[in-house]
Amino acid sequence: MKSEFVPVDWIFNANIYEVNLRQYTQEGNINAFIKHLPRLKDMGIDILWFMPLTPISRKNRKGSMGSYYACSSYTEINSEYGTKQDFLTLVDEAHLLGFKIIVDWVANHTGCDHEWTTSHAEFYKKNEQSEFYDEHGWDDVIDLDYSNHSMRIAMIESMRYWINNFNIDGFRCDMAMLTPVDFWIQARLALTENKDLFWLAELDPLDNPDYMMAFDSAYTWRWMNAAKQWKEEGAQHIHHLKYVLSQYNETVPNTACPAWFTSNHDENSWNGTEYEKYGEMALPLAFFSATWKGLPLIYSGQELPNHKRLAFFDKDYIDWKPKPDLHEFYKTILELRKGNPAFRVSQHPDNCILLNNSVDHHVLSFMRKNGDSTAVVIINFSQYTLTHVEVGIKDTNGLFTDLFTNVTKEFGGTHIYVDLPPWSFQGWIK
Image (cartoon, rainbow, N blue to C red; front, top):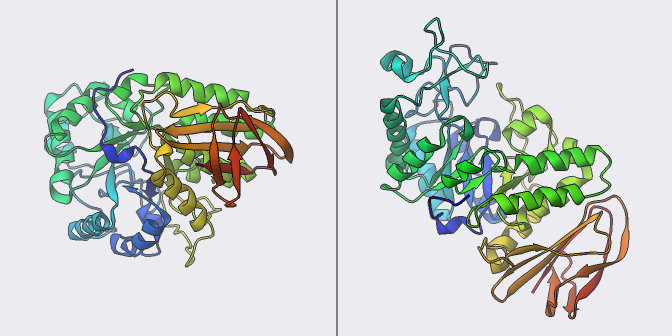
């Protein structure tokens, strides 16, 4: 599927950090989060994605605070988070530090008492009783009607409001596949008049390939679920995981950047932390997410690491420490992908290729290459100590240094040999 748009250049070696503002601090507001910007900058974060900042409907509200994804207005800010001036200050300070800011956009539905329910009732779908409803049975939201041209224009103008008033850099589009793809194309064409933006879709391109005409990046749910199932079944043979990766290579446009992740707000709250799902496989997967072709997506608190599920509809703040234990780990892998051209997403066929190895039922090995820059990544997805593993390097020559140990090794010929402790990983950089 060919994309209709050229992505903004700054995403090709970037990363995304999801900010759950409600749970990020005890205060749960914008001003408290601003204090974390220097730490996140030092950790190597590029793009800050804010979960919905809009006010939450009171009708049919879930829990004590409600769902972020049941808004009562598209152009206001939840007073629990602060003021519009607070958010503008955050964006300005973040931009000065080099961050890009994207906001969560919920286009399929609104909360049950959204301001449009009284001012523009015709914007909504209605059942046989002429009542607002949601097709999926979610009882705190109601569906919008995309056959209504005026509603589409109002939605686009609401999105434009955030560009014009806060100078945001893009949108993360919630459940994007529930909204017609032609709307996203329409919105992107219209909003490009204001600014070139980054567009991230909450959908899997393997399930919704046509949506990649409109979006630069999308979630890799099928990879995440395959890795979870593989771990639960005993973590024996990774051939199916390689097959899933090959499906993304065949489906996703060359310029697209799949978002690789082990956690997000839904996964953490409803399915468990990455340590519940993957155990000792969590860090190898994080390293994979930062080194395979695409974008790594990190959730609030993964750098701690956070071992608890955060409540979704009620207050349940992250218990930060002055220096999170995994700060240096993430800093190392994020600075690698930003600073080494080999990890920049490229259309060249050698940009990301699997390498053969002698224990290929346990070891994933691949090469990233861009011009004169080359990196070889080797990950032991098993509980076993593996010695003298032969890895084919396709006549790659030169002096390489391992990212984590600073050990140097002369590569020459057709293969190298490495020793791999359980669940370990190596990144050999030329």
